Image 1 (cartoon, rainbow, N blue to C red):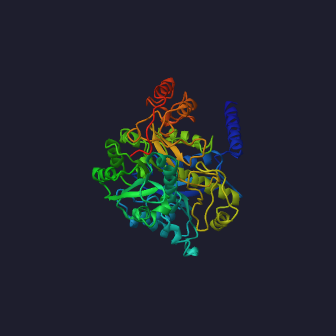
Image 2 (image 1 turned 90 degrees about the vertical axis):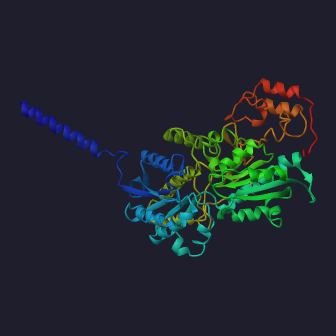
Image 3 (image 1 turned 90 degrees about the horizontal axis):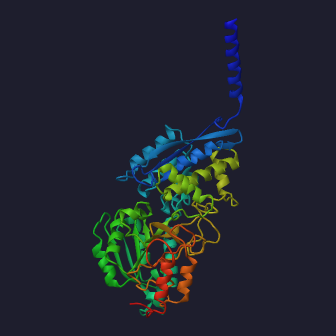
Length: 515
């Protein structure tokens, strides 16, 4: 009798297990979609601030929501990671072998990555040999698309770039920000008759002496060209190139001081950008820095420079927790910090996350993994993604580059673009585009303009300055109404003491333009 009872219990348990096994669950997938993520292992652009954690986050979220929903069922996203061999020394040969490993051994159906231009070209060729869709994330070099798909469509048709916008558009973004900054803020303060048809501001150009900067250097320093780039109010009075790896930048900064420049366009992708900005602050160089400084995009830049980077402006995907898409971008930021233990995302993280979701959205829209169907979907003139975490709209150009049409101070259409941010009070604040609800005003270092209670830089302290402080009253860095210049006592908050300081200086003035 006892044995019968035990047998009956076992049979009942087996029936229950079978019943539960037959129920559909999120964890049941009809198959897998394997995506290779290849990037610069050893650099923060890979981990912890870059594409590894962001792609993992995207995959986890997609799988938790039931996977990729195709016509024949739900598929699980599986990632395979590869080292593009960019660090410490770029090795194109090994990068190509790693790409081949991801495709032939790991079985990746799609590849995303490619940060360093010196190795991305080699990886492109391997991916195209195997006709594997490759979504560039990190390398901005125009030629990766203008000299491939634009020249030989059939060979390179599975090549796309999801991030960043290309080098030409990055350069135009700097130029657009410089034109706006010169006209709106620097010209009234420092514009002088320098022999041209308009008052002009003296400009210095300093960049690392690497091949990728050669074209930009020419456009920004050639007298026959730069007026069309920087606008009518720029007069380039000094230009210099610094060898990559230089730690003592004082000779070049001394030349900037002697040139009396008030705008300093600086371009650095490597480590020299850090000592450059530290020494810029220590030497009280009276020129506001704007440009590209890849190391300045890192969360550690503030601490690494001991806060000397304050007032530095440079290209970035976004600023600190910038709510481009409220409830989406800021949620991504918070989730990324939770995953990494506090590391801020940089542009390769945004690109990986966006790229993964763009791909999945296309897979689900077409209902298939077939690459030619996906290709037709992306090439459809009507194609446009739903909002990503960095832009309300995304689509591709005819040569599969991420589409960008606005690089100046206004962002009305919402397609992918780079932003210009300025380090202020330990945060990166968006200053261009200047027309968004989260945009901040450019701030001027106090050693460039000593009348700090003149908040609108018009040469006098009056009711407009008190009104500016009143509008920001009660705020601190990170709040929507906070503005750096209203914190005149530099204590991190805008309160009655700031208004009292402005009131005390009420009526003070200086003669503009300044020397």
